[in-house]
Amino acid sequence: LSSSLEYCPSNFISSGINAEYGDDDQCEQLTAAEVLQRLEESWINERVSPYLQESQQELVDCLLEQCESVESNFSRASSFAVGIHQLEIQRIKYMSTDYLRTRLHKIEKHAEYALEEQKDQDGEEGVLKLSPAEFVYAREHFRNLQLHLKETALKHMPSPFNNLDKKKSITAPNLNSFIFFKVKEDTNNVLIDPRGDPVDLSRDEIHISKFLPIATLLNERKINLV
Amino acid sequence: MDPSQVEFIAEKDTVSILPNFTEDKLYLISGDVGPFQPQVPVVVPLWLAVNLRQRQKCRIVTPDWLDVDKLKEKKAEELESNLFTTPLHPHYMEISNIILGNSRDVTNADEVRTLVKDIWDIRAAKLRKSVNDMIHHDAGSGQLLAHVQISNITTLEINTMRKFFTASLDHLHNLRNHAEICLRKYT
Image (cartoon, rainbow over all chains, first blue to last red; front, side):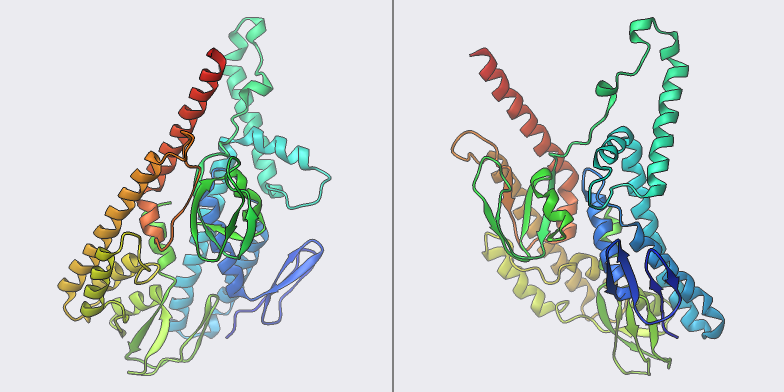
């Protein structure tokens, strides 16, 4: 009984030992354990950071498929093994749902900002922050909110105040809030404090700084939020 | 982050157990465990060890660092040094709580519990002191520090004051920036 799945965004075959986690042009060969580790790191980053990180929806989908394939093998396994596999599946499901829940919470808080950012990024390279489903959710949430405000209050106001001024109503996240991070890879000459000098970061150090200067390092997976 | 979530993360760490049953190797998504044979030590994740212990299917082998002498040494080391010493384990507090709570196999459990708590208290005091120093530090130009390095601190310790600390740093920087802007505008 071995957990097995091969997954690529374009096609999906059930076979093999490794979970293949695909990313547009490059397919990375990761074991299921590595996918789980990556999701855990993304979950912690998402919980602690002030704003949405890049969407790791593929990790979540890949893991859920792994869980399904394990569950489909339950009939062949002893009840002891089934119990333990179920425990693990519950842990994985908790982590994935909490990850998605945190993201949804941030989307609801900053729906307009996220949509604007996505629009600006359209056509550029790079991973989008909102997955397709999240994009639809953000758009609907924003529309419903606007409609609600209009129907309950704005409609009854005199005409200069009748509309939501887009620029004034965006609740942007505070990207300068402080966070703790741990260094994964040695990096040199990072400008953490804009008024200070560039700093060298070595592995396993823990730092406190504002979020914005290290946001790119986080995307490159050179640091982990703690 | 919720403390229970920090504990959830700590439950992934491995611990050695002595099973009292026989089973084949299990291919879990997070790694392989087993095979299980009576009285043969096996390395499993903590969440699995706790579950098996609760079902009376194994005994948990106390980790090396959860020993009275080691803890006394560590506590002395911690008291001497001004900075944080390397923690017993990156999740020492969570793991010791879980193991002491679930397993009756720890020798001198009460003494171990007291020593771990003492180490925690000493580190918490150091943390408070360094937070205080950071806020009152003058970088030579009346500006607040925007970047500090702190090492050898565990996630749970960070988590105890994360919310309060980051929120207050935000407010302080905000106020300081506004003060600068006002000074520039009106002088």
